[in-house]
Image 1: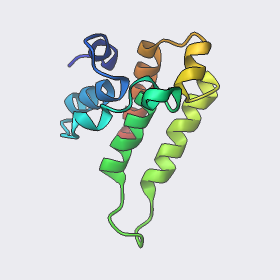
Image 2: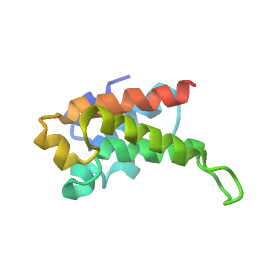
Image 3: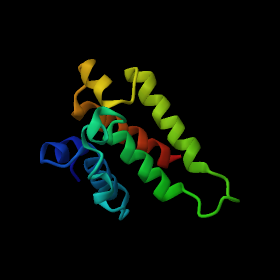
Length: 120
């Protein structure tokens, strides 16, 4: 298994890289293409693609199928984003770049935190 930062170096968006590495590590089959529009902060510098992909993965695996079910995915996504914000001051690509945070760093940090969520 490659690290998500290695997939990013190969030309995958941050979102694709996180999904691809997560699938390999956890034997899941979440479509990598879900992360294709997430590069460069959803193409406009907003939410980091790695963070967006993590939210998609959480929704895919912990999401609900009915509004009568508890929304576990929402709480887990909230925790993940707050962890990123606490460490880096923002989850937005443009802010991360201004603060000198590389894609490799945020992709790896998000991937590690995402996996911790599923280890519990």
